[in-house]
Each structure stands twice: as structure tokens, then as C-alpha cells.
Length: 298
Length: 329
Image (cartoon, rainbow over all chains, first blue to last red; front, top):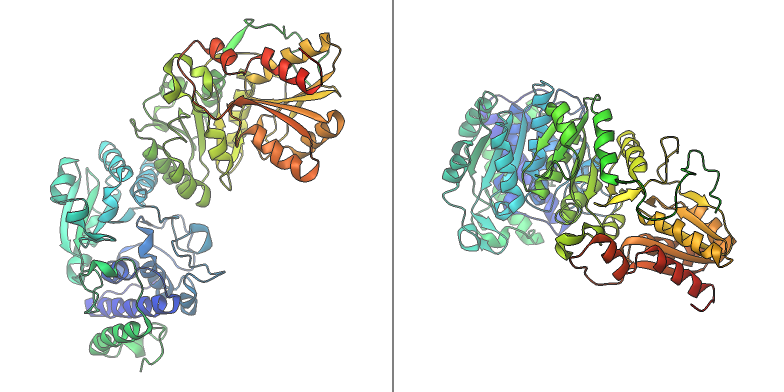
């Protein structure tokens, strides 16, 4: 697919995805808000710039694999996949409804573009490791990206995979931790401390990079270099702001697992939309299909 | 006693204990070595190479062998990933640990995710013996049978385990196979066919049907011989696939015999007996006695002693059958 190469275009795309997320959650009346908004920049960078993939041929063998381990942030993946052309955008408003392909947590065989089924936490990195192991064994060039939350690193299964990937020096594995310091019940460091997370991965024999996960320039720079990672698996710890773009949601753990009420959704949309209009320029002329799905976007 | 004309059945089978006995798990190891030429076949192990009999495979095909360490959750989830990249992974551990430890991962990342992973539970049942109750997997059939998109196979002896392993490799989809630790009598031979989902009638009869899964099938044959001496003609069925259950054969047995004894080295809830009771109660209510573990844990001891104490022996099956037939013991 055609990549977005300009940082301004990528930022604009991320805003549209954020608007879509709010529209979806508002319509669904259930789902997670904080994580999806925080990860919109990274998802945009991956699907519109970094990944080798083809929305017209979702099963193309040469594609990179993107394993979403923390399935509950799937609204951001759905919104990104739809914008990238995997399925019609109008389907985004069916999220969590009876008969939808957009299940509350992602179900691989329901929707094109998903590489796994997830929801129960802590087992995505292991699956990504298995893929990376097999690709290397078969001398294939595919890179495997795995997105994890920080909260899910309370799970033992995750650390079993951390050891496995390091033992096997899976340098074709790039994991990204959404380090937003929140989980359902509160701050990660109060629920079950993870810091110093970078030192932990270094001690487990991983390459480690720490970036600002809402800074498009930093994301693109780090992810583009990730393909050249050597010798060890790579962990990118992306410091993100949960609820990014919506003032009353940012950094508040209460927004981890709930959707906005109608008036809140309206307020959130207005806020992000104002940001979008600010950044839009001649975007709508150049990208006819890439507009937010909510009403009232002029 | 005349056995059925099932092709290749071991008609020289001596219906006494302590004849030629081979561990069923050897059949798994031997089959894997043959399958290894297919580069897609991989074996994942959680620090139990020797006792799950994957050692020979590991030596012959080191590239296709993955050592996970003592980490069963990782065992099945990495296997799911291998399968996503086109491999056919066999993951083996003790049944108590896998599927015991990692059931949710199997459910989400293999069954619901529709991944072609074969899960092998060794040392299942009470016959682990001296290791005690912590290692005696008696609930594995129930928890695996409850999973959508999962098949459950319990082969009866060495040859059948070998065939079942090959059949699973050629079957596309999630599968669970369990086998015991102890040596087992040889009922089937190289010539005996094996089809997933097709139960084998080892002996015809019309007074009562003895339906077993796993090495206890031999006990059913011995019990049938004892019943014959009392003038009763028992049908014996090796129901090696618990899911999908062979409805046709089970219904035929129910209609012909009217009475059924199920035998399994597992809890009587949710396993073979449960599956048959569920099926027949809906289509052809039949009197059933379930022989197996009765909602309790096992303990340490010699396997044959344990089989007797906990009521899995041929003698026990015989007595339960006699009771159903209305004969006082």
C-alpha cells in the first residue's frame, strides 16, 4: 500500500484514527478508551509507514506480522485497519454489536488483517516469538512486531516468552511496550511495580530503546531502524499518554476500561477535531477516503 | 473368547495381565521420528524430553525441536505462533501441566484462534503411581472435551498411539492426545486401522457393552472373558476418540445391549462416561455405570495397586457389569 512519508500526514492520520476511536466507543457504549487513544500514533506509524503489508492481500506471505497482545485496545487496531483499507470504514460503528466482525476483543478468523486472537493478557509475546522462531528457521525475512501493554507484564506467561526470545536471540522480533503507567485498578507502580522496566529487559538479554510514544518523529525513526536490529530481540518501551488528545481522559486510569458517555464523546470529538482541523491543510483533497467517520466533520 | 474380526486385531492376545507390555508413550516417540522428515513437523518440550519420549526426535531433527524449559504456558503459546508461521507443532508435557497449567492459553490462542497445534498429555491417569496425586491428571479429558474446536484422542496401546500420532499430524486443527505412563498390553497390531472418531468394536456381544478409552480397554476384554464364564456375552468397544464421539457405534451398542459400563482412567465427570451419558440421555436413554475416579484425588502407590484400590481393574469392571446384569456376586 501507499505509505505516508511526511510526519505531518502521519500526525493527521493519527488524529483521524483518534476521532474514529471515540465515534466507535460512543456508538458501542462499552470498551476501553485510554489505551487506544494513547497508541494511535504508534499504530499509524506501523500501518502507514513501517510495516510491509497489503490490505488487498491480507494473507500475503511476505507480510510482516503484527501481534496485538493486549487485545482490549483493539479499537485502535480496527480503526487503523479500516483506514488502511482492510475493510469498509462504516463497519467501525458495528464494534461490539451482535453479528459484528469487530468483536469486543479481537478474533483472528473474524476479520482480515488480524494476526491473532487476544484478550486474556500476557500471551502475545510468546506467539510472536513462535512466529519469529519459525521465520528464522525457514530463512524468511518477515519481521514480527508485538504490541504489549505494561499492565499485562504482571503475567508470568509474558516473562516466559521474554526468556525464550532472548535464549533464541530472536532479532527478527520487535516488541513495543505501551508504557502508559495505568491499568484497570490504578497506577502500575502501585498495583505491581515494573520499573525499572528498561533495566529488566537489559538484564534479560534484550536490546532496549525508550522513546516518547506520542512523538511521531521519534516513533518513525526508531521503528524504521528496528528492522536492522541484530543479535537480540528488541524491546521498544514507548512512553505514552493514556487518553491522548482528550483533556479529561489523559493520564487518568479511570478511563482505562470505560467508554465515553454521549456528551463526553461529543466533547472528546470536538477536542480532537479541533486539533485535526488545525493540522489538516489540503489533506482532504489528497486523501479522499481518509476522513473521520463521525458526523459533523466539515 | 472370540474377538471381533476387526482387521489386524491381535488375536493372539492373552487375556491375562503381565504379558508383553509396552508403554503407550513409546508409540508417540516412534511415530514422531517417522514424521520428522516433514520439515513442518516440530516438537516443543517443557524439560521432559526423555519421559515424554521425544528424545529420539530431538537427536534426529534438532532443527525442528524446541526446548522451552519448565514453562507450559509458553509451551502452548509459542506453539500457536509456530503454527501461525506454517509449522505443525506437537507440544508435550505431563497432562497435569499441559493442559493442566495452560488451559486458558489453549482455549484462546489455539482453539478460538484455530491453530494447528497438537497437545500431548503424557503420564495421564492414576498409573503415574508413586509420584502421587499432584501428578495424576484425572481431569484433563473433561477440560479438553469442553473446548470448542478441539478433538480428544485416548489411544489404547503402543501401536494405536503410533497410528493416532500420525493421524493427528495429517488432521488439520487443534487436537489433544493423552496417554499413560505404565506399560500396556498390546491389543492392536501394525495392521489395525485407526480413524479419528471411529470407535472399534473389539468383541461382539448383546448382554452388556463395556466401553473403554486408553489402556483400560484391556481390562474390559479381561472382564468380558470373566463374564463369558458366567454365561454373559459382553460387547467390548475401544472408544479411542472421546471427541468427536462415534455416535453411530455408541447408539448401536446401546440398542443391542441396553446396558453400558464405561471405563476410563479419569474422573467419571466430564470424560468418556460423561460424553456417552450426555449423548444417550438425549437420543436413547440407557442404563450406564461409569467406572473411573469418583470425585476424589489419588495417592502414591504401585500403579497396579492403585488401579485396584480406586476401582479401575478388570475385576472391578466385571463386578460392576454383573451388578447391572442383576446377578449377585
